[in-house]
Amino acid sequence: MSSDIRQIIAQAEASGDWDEAANWCEDFDWERAEGIPAAEIYLETAAKAAARATEQQAAVTGAQLVEAVMAARDDGTSWERIAEVLGITSQATQQRYDTPTKDPVAR
Image 1 (cartoon, helix red, strand yellow):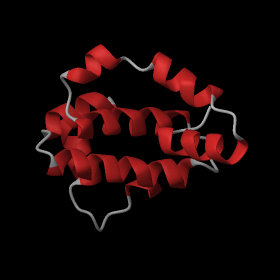
Image 2 (cartoon, one colour; image 1 turned 180 degrees about the vertical axis):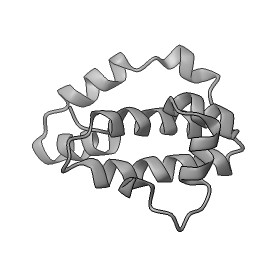
Image 3 (tube, rainbow, N blue to C red; image 1 turned 90 degrees about the horizontal axis):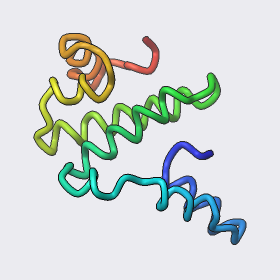
């Protein structure tokens, strides 16, 4: 399965086979998502993709994860909540993602 819905849609548009996109929509927990900011849903999706990534995919999913963390912070999500989603401590989260010039993918 592709790592995010954008890739799923791109593949469906290219192939004309929308089954994977339909499955993603059916499997998505829409009720739970109703009360969660979009930035947090993006963060959770990126974190799951990064956890499943192969070595070749790591750079792409790592970059998506950084983007998701920054979007969540811009949206007002606390470091504590981001750490909870990522499954690491708040301190580790801040050290890894607080300075945009750091390369968290390389760690």
